[in-house]
Length: 469
Image 1 (cartoon, one colour):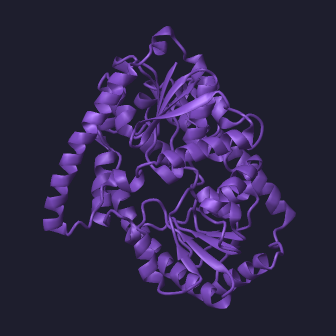
Image 2 (cartoon, rainbow, N blue to C red; image 1 turned 90 degrees about the vertical axis):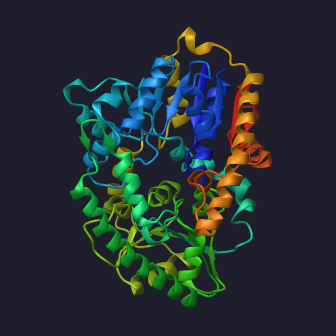
Image 3 (cartoon, rainbow, N blue to C red; image 1 turned 180 degrees about the vertical axis):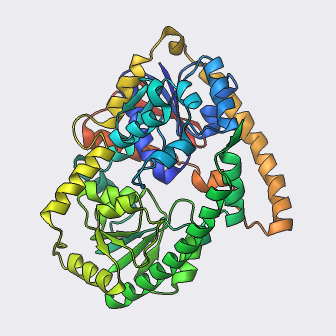
C-alpha cells in the first residue's frame, strides 16, 4: 500500500513521522515522508498513485476543503492527526470548532486522535452522526516521550547536549514579539486560514482576543527574560538552555537576554533530546510540560502573571512557581539532586490527566496502532506501484525551476526588505542531510531492535522513501 506523510515543522514532527514510516515499511508498505510539495502536492496533481495521505489537520477552510476533494477524487484516502493537538486547553470545544467540521471529518477515512480527550471533542463537534472513523491511537510524538526510548536519546546526546554538563531547559511558547511572522501578518494568516464558504470562524471577537492575549504574552516574555538573567547570575555553574518555539527567531532571544556566558539559545535538533538531558524544564503553557512529565523529567511552570489566557493544562502537570524567588528555589532544589515537594494526591491527578490526553503511554506504540488503522483501509487501488524514475525527474525539474525563481525573488526582496524575511517553508522545514536521516534511522533500529529489513532512500531535498528491501 502507498502511504504519503507530509511534514510541516521539522523539529516538531520529523522524528515521530520517521518512526511511523519505519513501522509502515516494516509491514511491506511503501512510504514517502517529507515536504508537502512531494506528498500532498504530487498527490493532488495526480503524480502519485492512489494511497493513504496522512495530513496534519482537517481545518474547515475553503482551501482545505478543495484539497480534500481533489485527493478523494484522485482515489486517495485521507487520514489525519492534528499536529497542533489542542490539548493545552481544558475544553476541546474551541479548538475542535477551528480545526474540524462535519464536512471535513466526513471526507477522512480515519481521524487519529492523541487520546480520549480530543477524540471525544471531535465526536461532540460532529454530534449524533459522528462517524466511527474517530479513533484514539495516540501520537508518534508521544511514543518518543516514553521511557523505553531513553536509549535512543543516549545514542543521540552527542548531537546536542553531550558536552554541556548540567543544564536547565527554558522552553518558549510565547511567540508574538519573537515570531518570525509580524503580528499583523499573523492576523492576516489566521483570517485566511479560518475562512470558509458560508462564514468566518475567525470573527472580530476572536481577533480582538488575540490582541489581549498578545499583550499578556509580551508581559510574560519580560518576566521570562528577567528570570533567565537572574538564574544565570544565581547559578553560575549551571547552563541555562533557552529553546525558542519553532516559529520564533533565535536571535531575538539572544538580543533580549543579553550577554551571559552560561546562557545558550538554540533551536538545534528536536526538543526531545534537550528535555531528556535537562536537570529540569521551565515553561508556561507548553506541550513540553507534558513531554517532561511522561519522560520523568522535573518540570516547573513559571506563572508570575495570572491570566485568563494561561494554558493551564500543561502547567497542571508541573510544579508551579508564581514568583521569581519560588522559581530560583525550585531550580536550586533540582540542580542539587533533590526532588520538588509534590503531594501524592497531585501526582495521582497528573497520571489520570495524562492518560486521558494520551492513548499510548504504554502498550503498543502509536505508530503500530496507526498502521493497524491504515491496513483496515487497504484496497487493491492503493497498491499500484509508483514510477520512481518519473517522480525523480519531476522533483528535479521542480527544484531547478524553484532555484531560478528563488534567486529572482531574492534580488527583489533585497531591494525592498534587505533580505529580512525568510521563506515560511524553509524556516519550518529546512533541508535534511543524508547523514541526519540515516543516523536517525540507524538509531531507531538499534534502540528498538526492529526495522532491519527497511531501506530509506532520498527522493528530494526534503523527502525520503521507505520500503522493505
